[in-house]
Length: 427
Image (cartoon, rainbow, N blue to C red; front, side):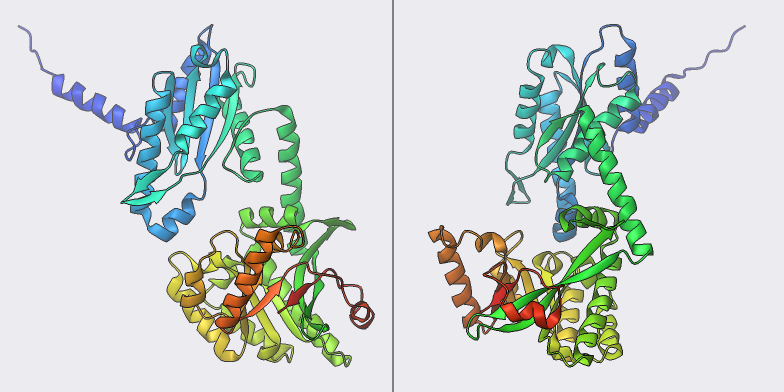
């Protein structure tokens, strides 16, 4: 006598559970676990060759914060669909987590022209789309490693593709790059910069420089803009090197607090010596500006160093005004302006610039980016833009500061010391 059991349903359930465990729930693509498994299987075959691509959606956090996660999910699904359509017949695609995707592209698809294949894929992914009826142009960064020459293991291939991706993002995003050994040197340099920033925060390595601001009408000095400076072992580290690193590490608010305090201390010191430095303009990052206690922190520093609020200008970029913190931003702006502090909209005309910000938020000044100023004499277009911005600002009763105009008046450095550098003009 024998007993038989029908295990069809159990097997079906087991297979379904296995499928779910290896599939990304949102996009239906393979997940990281399945992707790694397929890559290892491919490398185990004798003729395994091809490309590994890591794909990141650029500025995805900004989209999520400004439009909501539902819209972000729509873009992730659209990206998955495009990848399946283009790569599917040549290999395998996966969502590795967050806004990162991966692709294994087989040798027969890319043997003759691997770079042309990646370039076409990048262009296909970057084509305009529509998210809930609103037009949107996605931007992608791609890092690519070739197997087997760029690594004998799945882990090494992914590491090298990630190095290539990191290199793209470090150089402005929206592009693609194949791994090369020099990229590792750039990564090592980046890691040294990260260590320098951490050490500078712990050991007072950050200092300030003062950039004079002069009046067009009066042709004289009217104040200073404060600039963060970093020296390591006596060597100057340029801001365009340490600031991106500090932003990625989340150190910008801490650096901002340090710069504010140093600025106020130096400003107070100048006044104690009988000098008249005019107004003090200090840059504030979006992350620092959105901190709930920021206005109170500024008020405490003003009191501690005996500085009048009317002497202070806080410069913010328009990225501080977008996103889900609009109510907090408006409250902070009102609180600061009620104290008598002026607000300047920095880098106006670039990035996320919108005339609605001049209407919707309380600011006192716009600061024109130097990219519009440096070719002013040669470019009729730049002259027209500057003229239009100045007229618009004056109609709205706003001041205008243009970066990088002219030379520092001879007496400024004599009066205030060698911390002075190039300056802007106030109109």
